[in-house]
Length: 280
Ligand SMILES: C[S@@+](CC[C@H](N)C(=O)[O-])C[C@H]1O[C@@H](n2cnc3c(N)ncnc32)[C@H](O)[C@@H]1O
Image 1 (spheres, helix red, strand yellow):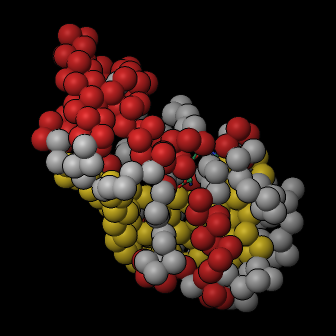
Image 2: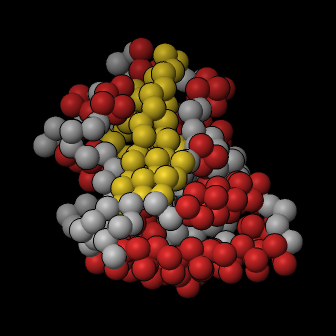
């Protein structure tokens, strides 16, 4: 089971869903929602966007199985510890159940979508990346090549489908109707002037620590131990080059992570059924 730190989520979600770039969320019809569950909410990055886009009186509840991440969700949200496959709510008690970057981490994503369909009286949605399609452009030449190599081995070695992206077939298999998908590119750029978090990230790159954290996955993905050591050596040299280029103010990087928003309607939403919301 993959674990995520609050720092990692903070870093990788920075700039995602900026207020002027939420078109891909339109099918969630957020202005009409009254009760939304954000499953696998982590530190609540998507929950905050949902709270901004839903009516003031609407309820947005973040749920996650990791108490350390829930502790980092800002007040006044009241996140709930729960498993995505067994939500502590009655059938049809939310009118949107949504997740972001959760299905790619589950061995059985269909079971989760089925559970979301049980808990929702109207819409189910998933915002999932295709990690095989991430691109990096960098002024440090080696960075594009090394990140592509590490990504390829990571995708091959991780036990779940981290390339899921758009999931219309999964949604239809779960019995959802009117399924549609939209693409959202999360673009992260680094350019001068660099903020403190970016400078820290570059120093971390020079230690090769994040690569070391992924060692077992990269080996499972087909890298030999010797190839891993060689990759780590090159990675650290690349990190030092990045730190130097930052000191000279010449470093620029652009990473694009393609996310796909999949939305479907639960069949029962064609009737007027909607149970009152309460957490069990
Ligand atoms: C990549 S993080 C995404 C967090 C957040 N949705 C975001 O996009 O920033 C995946 C999250 O799913 C949670 N998670 C993984 N498996 C879960 C499960 N079976 N039930 C509930 N949460 C789960 C993890 O604890 C983690 O917070």
